[in-house]
Length: 70
Image (cartoon, rainbow, N blue to C red; front, side, top):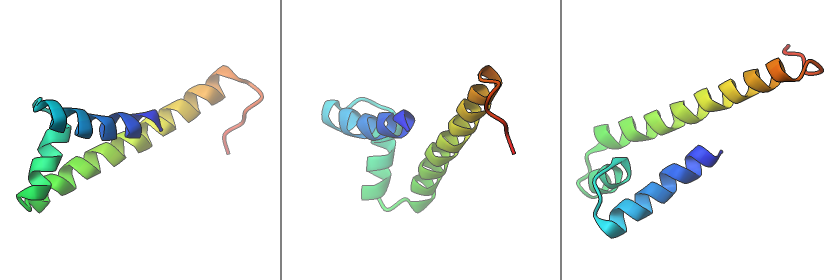
């Protein structure tokens, strides 16, 4: 869940300081109504959140033998 907060923080930081990055790309794409770029950035961010949550769950189950998957 921290990854989602990191992305939202990047949007604000990159917009304020005019740094190039994913956050600024998202803001500029929203203002330009470039829906393909907005969908791609949102899809990438949500896919990364899902993948990282799965990795954390599997690692937690691997490290703690009391946890069973299934």
